[in-house]
Length: 207
Length: 225
Image (cartoon, rainbow over all chains, first blue to last red; front, side):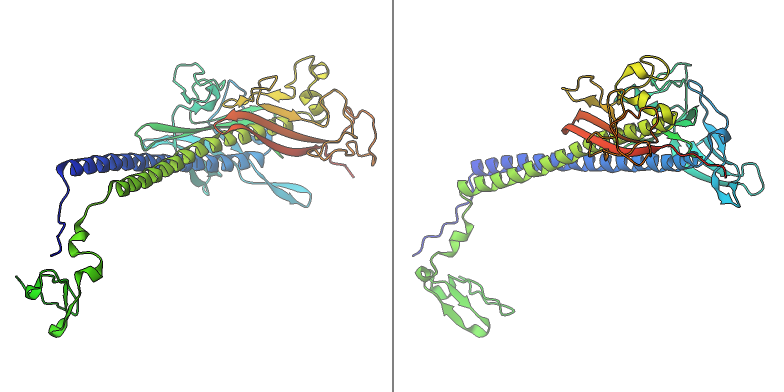
């Protein structure tokens, strides 16, 4: 006769096993959740910063291709404008400079939030209109108050330390041929709070 | 006692079939029986029901722990890498902004405005930006004397601009005044080329890091025919 060994687990063994498995499961769940949240936040951050960078690249290229004298209105810090009109040099024909039709970059408030809008031939019959970015706040933020983003309040004071009082998410100020472009884009992030992407780019008119 | 019959050609253990309580029997289709002595198999069927030993459990727990640790450290590293990228983006932006500010200056005053000597500043002593600048959001290296993360590197940090200095980053020695020769004279007032490197060195998430951007400013004039 061969003795069969069909012994099951004791209650103690089962309890210990369950405890260990529960601890491991909780640990794995926490790590997975943290990783998932970090990944979502990372993707959100990348998307937001890409939006800011793409918009800035468009603005920068436009300003760079224009002549400083053709940009109006000219505002010197602490003055600023959220709306510039300019012309771009397209090239030369028979030694004569060929200019583009007037173009305009402006911050527009809409019920859904602020927008950056580019216009070609503004006010003319052949006007073209392109929205370059959404999610531009009415009042700006800036990294120039330090690493933490500081929100500009509507109080006549420069709250965020960028020398401009009460500026919106898009602001221009000029110093000679140098144009300071302040841009902030903000959206509600995965954790439910507003996440801003703020930039100050300085660009010199090349023409 | 039941007599197990196989189905679909599959064989099953029937150790209790036909009164052979101790002998495993494999019953094949069409009633063919193969009896195998229990001691030839090395173990009895009941052995399959045994639980894991403590060593097995400990090994499994260890493997799981190591896996979780590796996963969490990977995530932590990814988050840290994002911060490093953000710091680098600030450094790049600061360097580019400084080059744009330099582009906005009068070319013939660039060297005097951005060298390390305040005495030759075009607007009076100490009025020019100088060779060091702060980068908001980045801390300078601990051993940085001026505690400013940004630095403008010109062929010379003194008030004298020489062509024959050795500097591989700035491609020096170089003819700076376009007289087709490299000499040992001071060209602070007649240069037409000015190589510039902007360096941002900061202490951040990844320790001491630095970024350099080099360019060349040139005096271009439109000649009337």
